[in-house]
Each structure stands twice: as structure tokens, then as C-alpha cells.
Amino acid sequence: MNIPVIDFGAYSLDEEEVPEEPMHDLRQQFKTALTEVGFVFLKNTGITQEEMDRVLDVSLKFFQQPDELKRPFCWKNFDSPGHGWVFPEEERLSPLRPPDLKESFNIGFLQPDIKWPQGEFREVLTSFFHRSKELSLRVLTVMAHSLDLDPEVFLSAHRSVGMKNNATALRTLYYPPVGQEVKEGQMRCGEHSDYGTISLLFHNNEGLQSLVPVQVRARSGEYIDVPVSPGYILINIADLMQRWTNDQFTSALHRVLLPPAGDSNTRQSVVFFLNPDDEALITCLDGSNKYPPVTGRAYLMKRIQAALDLKLQSFSSKLTDY
Image 1 (spheres, helix red, strand yellow):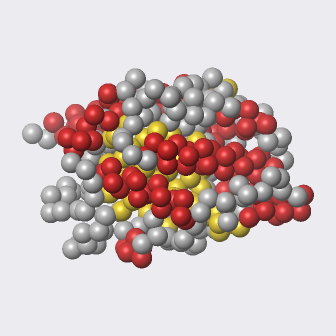
Image 2: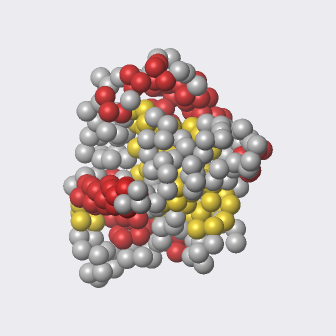
Image 3: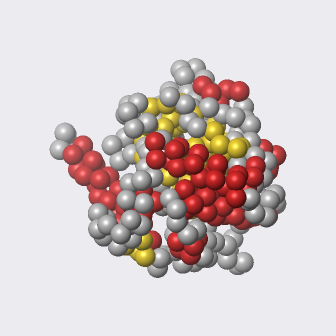
């Protein structure tokens, strides 16, 4: 099974609007891909590989510094949890596995007075945040058309992206070389689904990346490799969007595997996690009551708490083994 590829050129960031006929084609392609797979590659989006590489380059300079130079930017030092450095093995996206072998830097609330690493880090990541936001809103527009909805249904719930009352985040990720100390069952990123509406995945274009793949789980239950293609952006449905569309669009589990034995290569990627505004009320768009209404913030907090509870249960069960 292959992940569908859609040419987004007719509605790229270089175009002001899309004519009726190309929109008809896009809406049909989106509906097929997102109802049957939950993931889709976009090409010709207006965001170039050069833009992606610039983000990855400045990020790599930050990650390759000694930890003592990165520690002042730890996310725990900021009032806004959507900003800052997440140190290696701090996260565990699959609560049934050991901590993930990765580190990251998140940006979400673009306050003018927040602390940033020196150099062009702030300028580059902030610019890319805005570019990703604009592309995401265009994707939401096509998604709405594919369901015969007014695009404002989705767009009006994302008015505050980049502000304090919205949890959208741009995350730049670094997967360091894997040594001999890997724990049983450990991955670079354990299997999980995203919480919000949609996510955009950007990654670097190195040939060896195919040996340390991202994998997504198809509806059949099998995991399929995500190929690395120049300039391509992987769009995936997140859990709240599946709930919002009453399961018409489906989210899917995904993960990042360890490299083959003896492979000491690193990996980088950037993900834009789009979330609705905190107070946006999400109800099933078909008028059903399959999922009760919930605000964007309440749903996010519920999912975060559920993940914490699973981790505590896993920790408690391990203690009983001793």
C-alpha cells in the first residue's frame, strides 16, 4: 500500500485563490486519501525544500551544542508550555515503551518577549511557523470542500493560531545516533496518534533516511514506510479532526523506528501540529451525537491526562515485578 500523493500547485502559497475545476479535483483526491488512509503527501505547496533545509540547519546547530548551553531554554523554564527545549528521553509518546530517543524544540505562543537561542534561530523558525500556518489553513479549506462544508466551519475554529489561547505548535526534532544502551522495546518515537486537527511533517532529504523510516499504520493494521521525497510534505489527520468529522476522516498511528544495527546516522524532522482555539466548540459535523461537544482545550487536557495516567499505570505494574 502506498501513501497517496496530491499535487497542491493550484492552491499553493504562491496562488491567491484556486479556480473551480482544480478545487473539484483537489476535494475529490483529499476525500479519498483522508477517508481511506488518513495520510497524504502534498507536493508543490509553495514551501520549498530550501525553506525546510534552513529550519533543519539552524535547528541542528542548536541541538549539537552541549546540554549546559541548551538547558536555559528548557520548556520548564517558561510560563508557556508550548515553547522551549525538550531534552533527550524526556518524552514517551507510547506509554507502553521506554522513553523516546529524541530531543526537540517547540514554538507555539509567539510572544515578543520570550527567550530564544541566539543567532537566526528565532527568525527562521518564526517565519516557518507562519508559512506552515497558512498552508494548514488552505488544507483545511480543501478538506471542508471535500465534505461539502463551508470552509468557515474549520477556519473559524483556528483564528488564534500563534496566540496564547491556541495550542498549535511547530516542533523541530533531532534523533541522535543510537548506541549500545538502547532499552528493550525502545524507539526513536513510539507509536502514537496526534491529538489536534491536522499535522504537517517536513523532513530532510538524505538518502540514508530511508533506512530509518517513519511508519504509519494502515487500516489493515500493517505499518508502511514513509518514503523521503524532496519537497514533499506529509499531512496526517489527528484525533480531534476524526472526532469532528464523525470518523469520516481517520487518524492513524505512526512511529519512528530505530536505525539498523551499526547505523550511527542521525535524523531530523519538523512537525507543525495544528490545534483549534482553546474555546472553539467541536461538535460532530453530521449533526450526530456520537461524540459529545468539547472545546479544543478541554479535549487536549483530557488526552494529556490520559497519557499521564497510562504512564503511571505502566510504572506501577513494573514496581510489582520486583
